Image (tube, rainbow, N blue to C red):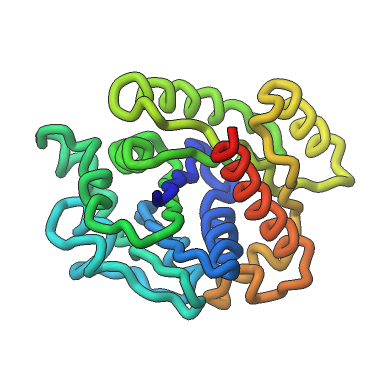
Length: 258
């Protein structure tokens, strides 16, 4: 069965896209067939993989609005086993466009019934809880929440938790939180360590052991159209994402044996 992960946090700049792209790349390196769905109008996941954003034609917007199927819209990236459904700036109008339509929160779930040959699908959500994020959560089996090791980090998480509970109650009872990943961690910073400790003491085992450090190679990589693993495999950023992917796989194995 395809595992579908939404990467979501209402706060922007927390590492959603970077985590999406690099975890997906790590799993593709293990010969898992992986699809990234870029639901952010900015299209950063698309560009980070060296693929152009698409205006018109086949993209996540035209799939969501029923004009094209997922199977005819995905693009094979330069990375074996890794595919992307590119974003479009037209996604900005989705909330208005689908507002009067019946059951608009199920559009992505229905569209994904068209594909069954992927091992993993990762949905990169925009930094807001609108119709795009709602579609992602309704279509997903699990949520991964990136949290930046900075002041006010918990603010967005509390709101997202409420949204996830509402989605579970009303639309997707099997939805669960796979884990919270701490990003942009600076071991020399007292604030970073404090935020990390606070989140772990509150959310306990929900927080992944792996911490994503502040590492200059991580923000450099997208400008070269590459995940950090291909840009600088030996960097601390690349190695931390490889460890995180391993942790996600291990949690899945634990569930299957549980």
